[in-house]
Length: 595
Image 1: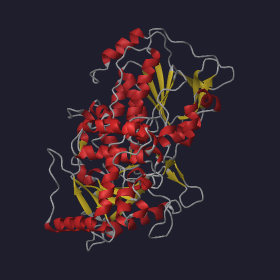
Image 2: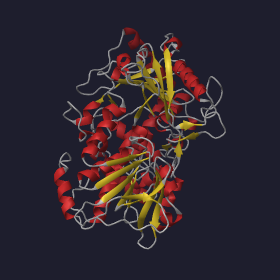
Image 3: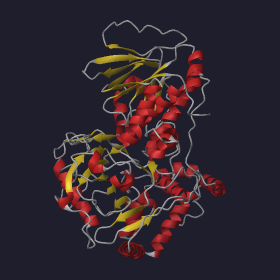
């Protein structure tokens, strides 16, 4: 299937559609007349509820197949993936300073999202938006009071980071220090545990390891501080905002497995670490919206979904109640509905009748979310950090960060953004909001917005300015911007409009399928069950593809189905997994599991 040619499929599906209905939008009123049916030859209509990665993906796939699509988004297209403007920061002809919910990270383990990106045109790019991905040359574990552990990320065709003699000294010191701080027997034990998971059959993963916390799987409580911080916490709290003591081993180890094979060049779409070479909206979201508009997709931004109304007579969604930008509630009636909102927002729109019609919707109440939110610091001097992501492994608030201007070669940051004084943006993710910090002794939720900024800055300096170098200077701090989705900080009831799905043990079994028992309702979002069991843009994209395929199956459409590519599975391990399946069914441990 050529995903770039949507015209012929649009024409074909429009011609074979048996029944259709245009989206009817009108104020809710008692006894209102039903919408007038469209002509039988008109394409079927779909309301996509939510304009994040899942919603835009569903709209993309549906529009290519000839459906009439309207996307309803309460706030801004792109969802958590979008970038945004810092209010009142532009001067002269410059753009506002670029901000974001959190920095974008698109590793080579992703396949479905990159496929979509290749199909989004971008001027001068042969492979569309996908060509805007660049690979940082390195990453680091930034230690407090110790040399940072810098890790090169080699990839064919990519030039490694150039290091000074002093940086080479520091890198070797950090490597030897880490090797000494994690005893050899602990390193060997971790390797054994990883091999146990690699050779575990799917049944053992889904049943045993899904119910085993990562902390327990690694026996972390018995191990050294560095074993705990790097191998237990570093792979959970700092990356997916899930506590190591609660995170499902299935989820964390599946991610580790995928990254390991990615680093080995196996089954990868590209390098281990990839970011965009421009602010997200410039590089990706705005071109995507423009492309979807050219395909006929309509957007209703500022419209908030309030309820999906279940028609008990037909068993279908009869309408969806949506509040328009003026606060007027309206009833939207269409042929099909794709709920593409984050789970914490989507489940508020499912009433008792709808939940009774499909029990998997009620199980979504058991899914959990947590806070992982970004803050940006704008600098008047380039800080000598590194060419990639830094994981502040010892920071109480589990900070990860990246300098962005150096990865945007087509932008002259001070000439293009803000007031001309800021030359760089240090984008930071805060993953731990319930642990006291080092400056005020308060959790992030207990701090005011200004205190959060000061605390994060202090923790960054503790991680980077601790070995004789002044990497971050107070005098170079121009300004900061904290995600506006966070509100009420420093009060008894702080809120976060953009929480992240987390993965405590048992979560996998409560994730719904894209197809529901309601004939015209489909689910898309990173909480929907897909092969990558993680709250990611890849999961959102894959779930939207599954939702579209389910819709095509329900309607008997002749259109080509969306390709949904699973995570890479090393063929040489399949025999060992088959052997483990037999042992699992006999009630035996994995053959490598020494306890």
